Image 1 (cartoon, one colour):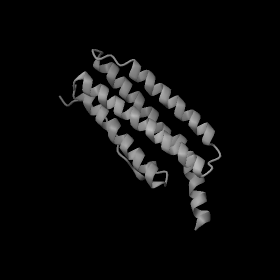
Image 2 (cartoon, one colour):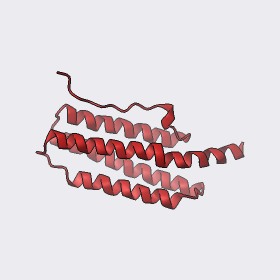
Image 3 (cartoon, helix red, strand yellow):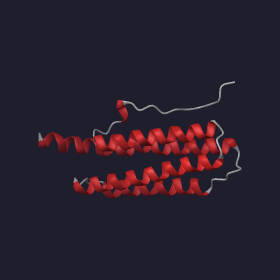
Length: 142
């Protein structure tokens, strides 16, 4: 029987048109896929926890980079977007804090699916809101 697995694939519809941000998003996807693999392959709890930590650290670094970019380019909804970042960070922290190394596989899969949903929804909804703003700025410069 084949092990269940979901995998996220990058596509151009996920692009916000800012190369450094798109690269961050691609890395998110890679890390989320690696977390999923560690769960579905039933790797040691220490490896699952490490990969979960990698996702969280990467998300935090990305959010800092985005917020810096917002300040530099005077994005009008920078504050609102930063609030959404804090919500995501708090949710990821709660998931990390609730990680039980002897937990059920289903609990780990559910946690990974929540992380996937949070980060992908953030890219496809929240981040797309600033994509148009930055595209407009770029067009004006040309």
